[in-house]
Image 1 (cartoon, rainbow, N blue to C red):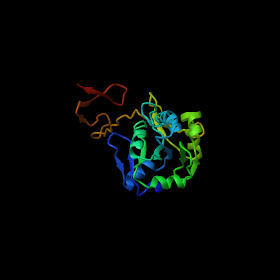
Image 2: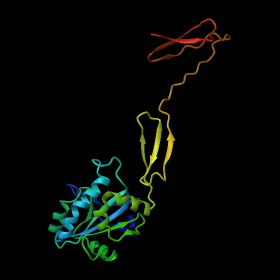
Image 3: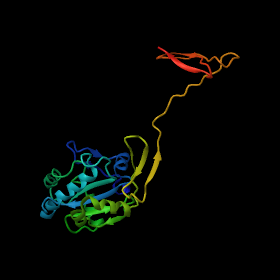
Length: 234
């Protein structure tokens, strides 16, 4: 999937329209992700009708307001518009985390031919290796919403791990979208106590070495029947 956009410029649909044009940037945002290629046009009434459903789908999988751990998903708008103004008008209504190709980039037409896109809107869903999961997921998104992502994730054999500690810090749960099939639990120990080592002082076993710390000092007090008990001098 990364290879599909290497040596290309992807633009983020934020206020600054930041350009991602290095191999490191492209790899960082597309590697190990399911990628959706959204072919649409501002002149297409069906595209405008579908857009709210797509925005809701994407927000529920990527927006921190809806989900604590954003999914391994990227959405790229491939414009079929006939002018840059049309493209900009459509992008203004899309989520700010969407990526897109600049209007002057001829690669838009190459992708349209590569995936045999004839109708708008079309959402091509790709595995991380670039192979096709769905040639057009528009109907699935409208019908199932964000739930259809789980099917794509399983089809791509993409394992997503989200680690969360419970309130008592007893268990560390390994969770994925394919639970309960894949679920592991790790035990974690939050209560780590500081160990102090005491060395015998002299030949007798009834005296111990004094040790100072920043809170005060330690002393020993012998009690009958005990080997030795430590008490804090305040």
